[in-house]
Image (tube, rainbow, N blue to C red; front, side, top):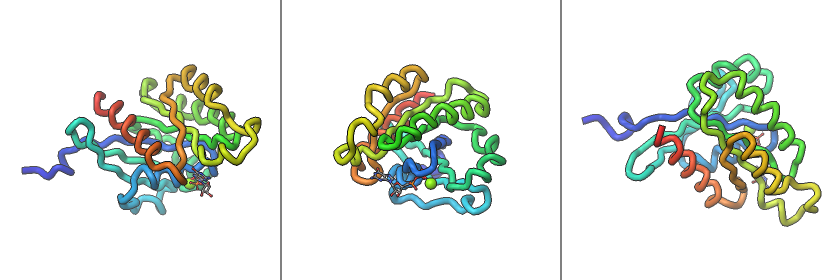
Length: 181
Ligand code: GDP
Ligand code: MG
């Protein structure tokens, strides 16, 4: 009898966005308790796994986070996008330039993914900073929702720092979407 782990389907999920938006913190949250892979030093990508139960089926999400070395990533870009099942586009809602930056991440994704209908998720991170900032320095939900609709993305706001529940909602949504594939 094969073990549960060997039978469960694995999905590759990329976590991309500007430096500093919280991709690594978010990936840690999404994969709480799971071990980082040893690949990280070799290819400039930090990859973590998260087992998930979706309506009784066990699936495995393999989250690929850039290890902060853009020049590594440039040469690795095709490897990075190979056999991707879903992409998480992350911005920092207290940093509008990270939201504008999404356009180039989308373009990179478009150029490098073979399948164009890959599920895409838009994640506005650092909701905890909304309280302490002037609203004109923030990316509004309306603006983000509009962007998400235009680019066929599922939109979430999270705080990797203080809102584990919101992060779990993202995991659940990814799992639900991928299970049906
Ligand atoms: P990355 O470059 O996209 O991987 O970003 P990191 O995960 O390294 O986070 C960049 C900085 O933002 C770090 O100082 C984190 O502590 C901080 N950070 C990440 N997520 C949050 C969040 O939800 N709220 C707040 N306030 N800070 C965060
Ligand atoms: Mg990082």
